[in-house]
Structure formats: structure tokens, C-alpha cells
Image (cartoon, rainbow, N blue to C red):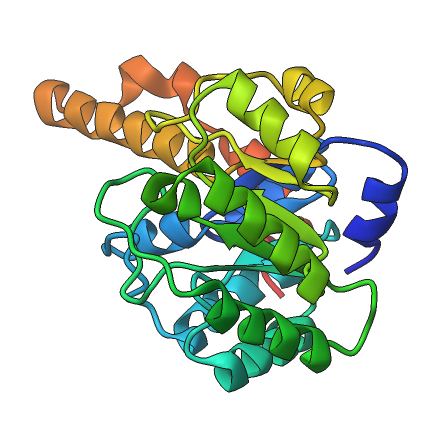
Length: 279
């Protein structure tokens, strides 16, 4: 693992960070030239047959994330939902993922059990309660290069002004990046950035509350990181579904070979040279 996120952000870039759901998808993100990847909580949960509701344990997420982190040389942001417990647990989460080689963790102020950020019915904890988690996270990290990303879901629950106030409080408590979830218009993103003087992250998920802004537009609006947490997962699932229907209906995959990753392409991605020959 090499490099860090803080240096990239200092250079004024707006980082495009796709979501990975396993080691192979992280390797494709690296191959495509992206400078960081996001261990998507939804992607990891969904790829294991679970909804994005915080059902995987910290150990589960750590094990799955470790495969991704070890497979690539670009920095990882790990979605840690609500921190896997209270402040002490959140501190332990930071220590664990920093030890695994992640370069940032994201924690959120939803009340457990959490919900997908673009669904109704969310609840948030009191800001003072979440501040305790942020402070524990900051104390637990060993390196100042390791980033704490604080997501607030308050906009959908309490409104814009509450989300802004929480962003300010969380930044003052030590969060390096503030992530306002599920804003709905360009004006809202611009207003938030004008009121919260901290590096900001935006979520460009599909079929959610946020319109489809480009990364250049987010940069103009003042956002340092844009995540695409589920794009690769959704693309892969749709392609797999089509391939399975092709086999079911035609009894052969020959008609879709042009849409499949070749053996040579897979072996190149996996750095398979030297393993394919008998020893």
C-alpha cells in the first residue's frame, strides 16, 4: 500500500472514488487509473446477500476489506457505518482499519440499525453523541495522515440548517472531511459548501435523491471527494443477469463472448504469470 489521501486533497484535486465490493473489483478500479477506492458498505453487504442495514459485524467488514486493501496499491476509504458501536468501539474500529492499511474511515450519525442514506425512515443520534465518536476516532489513529470522514444524515431528518450545524460541530471535533448525505439540488450542495468550511465529500449514487452531477460540477461546488459507491456493483449484477439469461434461453454463451472478460484479461489483472504452468 502506498500513498495517502491527504496529499491528494491538498493538491486541490476532486478525487473520483469508485466503490469496490471485493478484491477483483478493487483491482479493476486501480487498473482504470483511479487514485483511490471506496470499500462500499452497501456493496459489501449486498454482495453477501444482505441489505445495507449494518448487518455485517466489524470483523466481517475487516476481513472482506483486508482482501481489497492487500490486492491494490491505491488508498482505501472504508465505510464503517455507525462505527460498530459506541465511542470506545469506534476508536477500536479506527485502530483496526488503520492497522489493516486503510487510509480513511467513514462513520455516520445515524441511529443503529442504520438505513441506506437515500431511503426514508432514517434516525440520527444527538450531535453530542456523535462528537464523542469522532473524538474517540481521532484519539485512536496513529497517523495524522489517516483521515476521519464524518457523514451526517441530518438533512433528511432535521433539515438543511441542522445538517450544516452538525457539519461545523463535527469538523471542530476533529473530523477531517464532512459528508452531507442525500442533498437534492445543486443549490443545496453549493449552500452547504459555503456554510461548512471543511473538505467535503459527495455521494454520486444511482437512483437516489441526488441528481446526476459531474465530478467537474462537484469541484465547482467545492467538494474534494466524490464517491460512486455502487456503480460497479450494479453494472456487474446487470451484466451477470443478462449472461445467465442467455445461457438459460440459448443453452450456450457463444453469442455473448464479446461481452465477457477474456481469460487473458483476467490473468493479466490477477498477475497470474508464473502460476499457470505446472511446477
